Length: 104
Length: 193
Image (cartoon, rainbow over all chains, first blue to last red; front, top):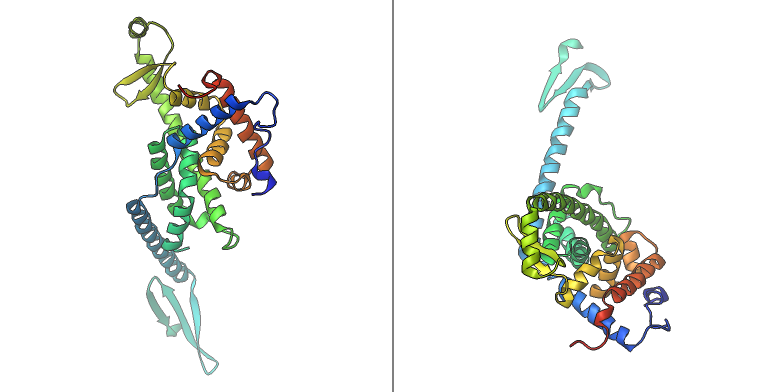
């Protein structure tokens, strides 16, 4: 424990602190412990949280996939080149790829 | 972050989180519910948890979760306060007068309220009731520091990191909290009867 782990003058060094205070302190600490000591985490709660975590991840990944497809669909019109010659363009619309060679 | 890592981080942080919530709502089982509820919120916002590196992620996770736990606890207490205010308005003067006659004095407090009925108990109850009342007089941050240090032996440095305050401030909170409790419970000095 570092020196800062000792809470200030609490108050064994205080002149007014006597053995009765010490007993009271011990009783207070014991009672706080009995009132507020946490129970162990429930395995079933952990399992529920893990399941929820996985579901959340799947949902987020699904959203990202959809968003990626949509943005590509909205933005893409790519040139098709063969041997360096422009033969047409290709457009992404959702999951459907359309070639428009007539534009060549 | 995968679900196993989240689970480990949560398991490690759990005792500290329950104590933080218990310090705020003063009820252990309610504190457990708050922590569980906070974990669900944390999962929904998991992308906002950005640990700086693996070695500090336990503390960082506890700090991140502690902030959520404190908000959830504050919301719950606000709701309970409104509910209790409504309940006290419904407790008319006659009921209070009857209660005073029955108890022989006016020193009573509501120690339980489940939405339907209330339990009243004299102020001069058992030591743990007095201690609970005395805790109420401390600031929230003092209660959290005190309980983390006393109940879980969490070091002052670690408490400081979790609550994002200097360890010296934590030490001061713990020290003053202990003194306040001693002062408020001075009639219990000496060996227990």
